[in-house]
Length: 422
Image (cartoon, rainbow, N blue to C red; front, side, top):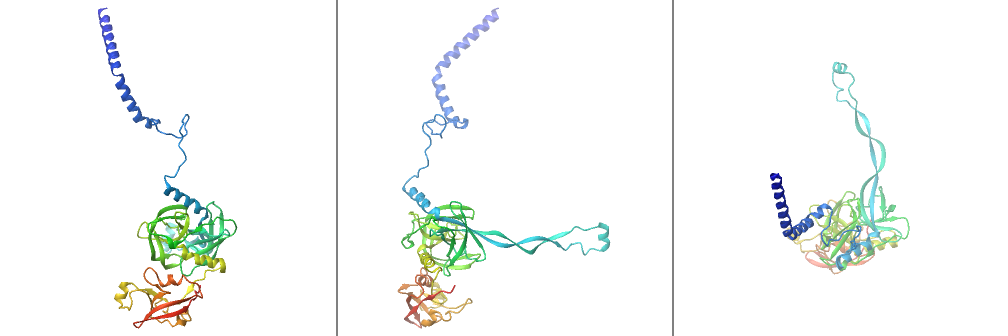
């Protein structure tokens, strides 16, 4: 009995101590509890204090729709919305041979007869062979943009130059159209396609002569041939570049006076538009540097406007023709070959043909091999302005004045430009 009373007394003391200590620590426990709950609640599916949530039950502040962060972002979004309806994806298909399985020679056929009799029939072997069957297969892709409501489309020559191929155009709305080649520019990486129909959305053509280094550039295209209307944003990194571009269908081609940009131009983007912040086309994406990142090139839209006008009025791209083979003189070339000028175009033939084409405007005007053409209508020829680029500013039938260095003297020739052979 005494032991029970003793135990009961101990329990009473313990309870009293717990009550006293608990009341003293209630504030401290509350503080630590709140802190612990705020840390662990996100991992328990809860929310942080004052955090906004999506439209969950009882939430009075739903997350609003995305809004651009400022004027610059607004301009980029607006430019893309303006141009993208007229940007198209182009797929290239060709009839390719279908390889079938044909009986092949057995590697055991030369074994002794006794060996073959002992082991019985040897396994049969087959090899791939071409029996003349073909099937239409997708072999490439690119981009383009619609320039008339009747379905004229600008793209690159290296995208659409094979007249034995089939071209399919997919609009931004997913509509599928078969396309035909209308014209190919013999002097620059341009081609024009046509799809049937009316009322197509079109782009607005800007002024590539007014662009400046550092201004925003927006590229849209069919990246890698599978991601339609991919958008990348950068700046104009360089002007009047001269590059040598290569493609499987057109080989190597020198492109003068192109725009350099760090907006990503991936395979499949070729032929798509390069935009300014107003959503106007200032260039046609054409190439990227394979050995570097963030270096892409576009043909200035003003260079294409002449071709577009020619197609609309004549049904083909007519370009001016001088009829010489030449190389642009650099300071290094002038020094090595002891030339009379440190700029200009040296008229010189090579493995690909003579310096002066027979019956060409240059021959008729009296231009000779090893002449140095210094200027075209007062415009200096140098690394930033090639002879081809300057001649391409004119139409067949135009008369131009060429300043030429010959035998230590400078002279002028008037030349009536012809129409470049297709």
